[in-house]
Image 1 (tube, one colour):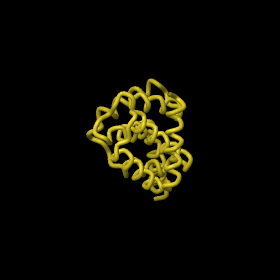
Image 2 (cartoon, rainbow, N blue to C red):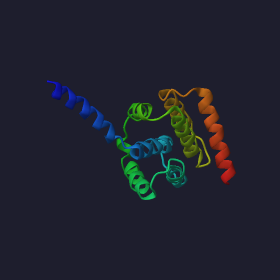
Image 3 (tube, one colour):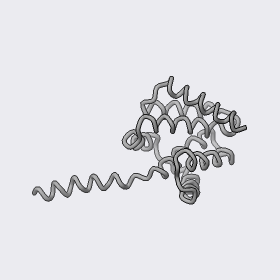
Length: 149
């Protein structure tokens, strides 16, 4: 009986290893880029750059996972799916960094659609990020974009 319980809890622990941070980030970022109905090349380039430079992901893995996320964008998972995993595995600082990068993605094509800003506000709420912190992240994202041009 003790072995059965021990195995049950060990199996639960191994399931957390199934968490694929890159897949999650790609899916969520493509969801943000697609929230206005289409994905611009600038947005995909920005996603790739952010994943490699900010989140320190492998460039080859990013290319593969990003293409998978683009191909599966119409079969997207719910926002709750993404945010529940983010809340479970990410620190508050990393969640705030994610919101900032999402702002950079939706702003990278030069326009901000109401659907894009609405999506980020919903995501911030689901990740327990205050409106003030989300607004500050948006300001930092605008600053990052203007410094690169």
